[in-house]
Every structure is written in C-alpha cells, then in structure tokens.
Length: 568
Image 1 (cartoon, rainbow, N blue to C red):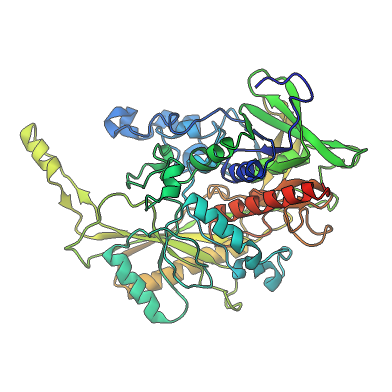
Image 2 (image 1 turned 45 degrees about the horizontal axis):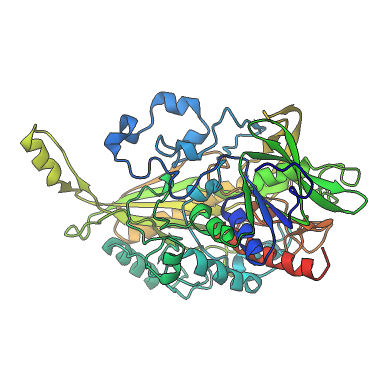
C-alpha cells in the first residue's frame, strides 16, 4: 500500500494486530460497514499457500524435524516453547531480532506475521464461567470484573458458530456449554477414568476438551473454504485445509470479502496519536519494518489487538501533554497487575488395563478436568484454583533390526506398547499483583526506535501452593484409578512460557482502579478499545482465547453503534 495523501491514510477504524482477537475486530467492523485498516508488524502470510512445511514428511526435514543444538542455541527463549521446532520456526519471532528486558525471568513467545499466534495456538476454546468472573470480588484480589458471564454468553455463541468448536454439552456450571460440533472420542481408558471421577460425587469431572477444530463438513464452513480435521497432528505448521480456526483461514478472508478491509503488514506500531484539542486519539504512528520510515494513519476508532504485552507497550509509549505517562493512564495502573497461567505442574503414569485396545491417529485435543478447588467456597490455603489436561494413549512402536525386506516387514507390522501412557498438565490461575508489571526502558530501543519493554513478573507463594495441591490431588485420583508409575514434575519454567500473558490494561467499573470500562474502552479516551489479553482483570483457569474473541466481537459492535449515535 502506498498512501501519499491524508485521505488515502484515513479510515473509519484501525485495528492493531491481525491475530486471534484482531481478526475478529476486523471482521465485525468490516461487516458493519466500516472501512478498516489492519496493521500487522510482521510479514504477510496468506492462507493456504504460505505454510511451507505443512505437507512434509520427517524424511524431508533436516534431522527428521528434530531440533539441533545450533537451532536451540540460536533462539534459547523461543526454543523453550513446545511448538517451536524446525518445521514451525518461521511462525515465531527470532529472539535476537526482537529483544526485551527481563528484570525477572520471563519467556515471551511471539509470532509476528499476519495471523499472529492464531497459526500456532493450541485451539482450546473454553467459555469462562461465573466462578471465573466472580473470583476477584469473592476473595478481594484485583478488582471486580465489570461484567458477568451473562454479558458475554451471546458473544461466545456468536464466535463459536463462526469458528467451529467441537465438544459435548456436559451440563457443568464451572465449564458452560456452547454451540458445539460433534466431539472427538475418548479412549477406553479415558472413559474409565471419567466414570471414576463421576463416582466420587465431589464436583470432579472429565470432559472432552472443547477445540476450535472442525469435525463436521457443514455448508457454512464449506463456504469459508474450510475442511474437516484429518487428525494429522501437525497443526502448528499451519493448516492448509483450514480445519482449525485461524485469522488467516477464517476471519480475515471474511472481512476482506466485504470490500472494507485494508491490510498492511510490516507495520511496526510506535504509538497512538492523541489530539489534545479534540480530546481523542486521531490515529496511529507506524514505522515501516523495511524502510524505517514513519507514517501516520488516521481513524475515528482504534482497536488494540497487538497481544497483551505489546498493547501495554504501545499505550505506555503513547504520551502527550494530556497523558505524560501513557495513554489512558490517569489511574497510574497501566502496565501493572500483569498475570498469566501457570503450567508448571505435570503428572504422568501408566495403565495396564484394556491392553486389547490401542489409539489410532493423532486426535487434535486432550481431555480436560475443569477446576474443582475453591469453586463455591474457599476450602484451601491458596486462592483460586486450577484445571488440568488429561490423556491416555497407547501407540504402536517398532524395533527395526533387519535390513531390506526384513526391515520393511518390521516397519509395516509394528508392535504395541505394553501399557497405556497417562499424562496431565496443570492450568492454574495466578493472582494479578501491582508488582507484576511491565514498563519502558528509558534508554534502549529496538531496531525501529521503539523503547524496549521491561518485564518484571514472577511467581509467588500462592503459585507454589497450587503446584503442590495439583500433584497431591491428581496423584490420589490416579492411584484410585489403578494407574502405576506415577511421576509428578514441577518444571520450574519461567512465567510466559504458558503463552497466556494477560493484564496491564485491566477492565473495571472505577477509573481510579482500572484502565478500561465494561465495553473495553479506555476510561479516559473512549475511542480506543483494547480487546486482547491486556484487558483481562483476572486470568481464570480456562484457556482465554475464546474470551478474547468474544470481547473483540462485542466491543466492535458497540463501537459501531456508538459511532452511529455520535458518541465517538
């Protein structure tokens, strides 16, 4: 795109970021008739042609697709993420090209391209419950959410119908049901474990995880150009069939077909432009990633969907006479109360039941144990709680020893593992605290002249207690199920590796204790909306991506209504 005049650089709305929430902001704004510019700091990625490794076999990849020592040493932070492999590295931001300052250890995993991390996400699509939204009000940590489940429920449904979510209607208050496609099947050992938990009668359940992966070829998804998941198990390479939801395969093409979308990749957002006389943001200041030239784009409303920490960075860097310490920062809370999910605890075991059965294919999701601690009352010495993944698999194995025809025969007729492998991983809520914060480095900048982000985020005693309780409770359930060789592991991984960073621009009712209102607008500058993870007041225990998408859809429609009413 080349824009030389003010008119060519003026739109009705600007969306910063093209990932999972930015795609939704763009889709809704475009469908409601707004000429919308999407700014993406990374390169262009077009579905389905820009997934270069999606169809490759292990023999077509260096080292059969495994990491070499040189590969890991080149990007030590990104290499800690399970999805960062030689066949997916092109969807991750290289460490050396995008530095930041770790005041305390924090692994910031980023994907800078059109589609962002929607190309590599794990596709968990769980609704939050009232217990999640009511947590801060109940125990007094953080501030009360300005909304409840009922405010977001119709937008959850709106998003689910469009992206396609597989799952069961399980009837659990702690994990509200949604608009589901056919679920994936549990294995026989998973079904056995589910029966055991139900028999306890203490609110512990095993369900199929709700995933944004298509299991049915409906006419609507065919119209989107998306096909049913074939269970290949290499989703993070990019999905050429669009079987899992991404911005590239779904929301951005839908926005484009309205004729209202303009997309500009390689656009590093420096700051938002605030007009002191008008009392509003009038545009976005951009540094071209290649030429390093500065360009300003203008719009009546701006949506920040740059991912949680980058959205904090942009607002902190958006200073003016009115906002000397960052746009909308009248409360002084901008950049504070950053939180995340803790994935530190894992537990594995073996089962020797049902050895006449085996698993087939690579099901794209695990089972899920929703939160069962501190749900209706405070029953532990720690706040909030945790959920857990759960899987039971039995795979084929081959022990090739021959040559030629004998080797081929052995590979064609593999044996079975003599046990089922059981695995679970904790997804724990962390408490937003003022000392967990991000700020701008006063001296150092990146290659585009943007200040480096300083990250000061750490675990606390509450997090340690949760890991211990997870191991204790899960070990008891595993023993009751007859599982053996139980092994509990605390990875001690740094915050951030969960890739669920949240907060810093939290929602609330009171401008003195929050930065955003109930509609995701800056209290002090209502034509700016924040609908990515930065808006989160607390973290809950369910994966947050579906909630981001619902917030984005809800806020975008609110923005259009307010524009047409003359309020923005």
